[in-house]
Image (cartoon, rainbow, N blue to C red):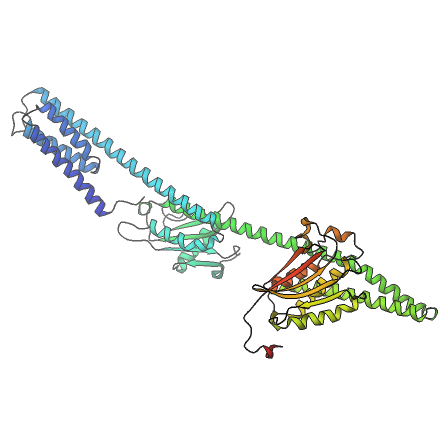
Length: 513
């Protein structure tokens, strides 16, 4: 609610004086047609209209001067201040009282209207400011706007009052630490000490606040419901009259404080939720590993114990079968452990991998050679599109992705059904696909099967078990390479497709192979 500017005041005075001039012109015009009683009504109307624009002091002065001039010009005997008739005396006294009452009422109503408009403007500013804070994902990014808003409010008649802001970066430290604050504007040591006091107590300080009113500045806390997140400094304020917008400024600061507190609470909730989720994942991982390690370990222990204690009674074929069982179960443990470690690694590094240019043919060829040892029925086949471009990525991770998909197909497709591995270009992607003729997956499980420790219902009836991290790892690897792993139901079974983005090829491809 700032005062009117000098240009606005001059305009109002000019309009008020113009109304008086117009009123006297009307009095002179109607002088020959009306008696003084009727002419007095024009004078009262002129005084009332002029009161809409002139301050009370000028209105009363103009009314008194106008009444004396009216007596001189229109009340007999004219040209003197003497009065012939007693009713004219009553008329002049009544006019004086009416002018004073009307002038006072008009000035009062005008001031009330001005205050109502100022309050409406302030309320609208607070509403807009509240909407900005509500929609902001990071309220701290709006501290500069709060600084500008306080500067606009602090513009005085004679000079401006410098504004500064401080806000906590995180928690309130036990002692005053400059590094714990974010600053906007210049703050000297004395002001900073007072800002810390304001921040810790959550109370405004300075003239008009009721606390330390002898200070030469205002200190306004950024308050929330249960914490204070910062403080504002408005310098050069020696009395409450110098800063009439104190209430609005504190409201702006409190809205910012509430937004910062809300953001702080959301961060704490997010951290607590992440910690609880991490703990749940760790517990589930340990439970899954302990369960799924038990079977291969029991098989290895049984076979090794038989070889150790009954070797002389076993035939060569039986010993070979036991040794094969140990190798097979140990390899199963290796794959399980590798999946767990790689998933933990990708989670730890946030999916940021160290890649290089790799040949899709070589990756698929090496995977096929390793996986054929798990395919006694020779179900695996590969079909690669000619002239495939180089892939940018981690060859070990891409190999592990294909191994997991092929191992999954070997487990959950009919014993003699074919499994095909393919690679082709699809628009802006290279697609690595593994297709089998396994049991259909329910539509509700399409996304669930890619979650950690989740397995589709069709797998529960299968002969092989698992922790449910294989497909989750495959999707994590695909996304770490900027791609995506998708499941598509086919007429004969299922297809898992890894879409890897095409990148600009290196200048000398041979040097990267």
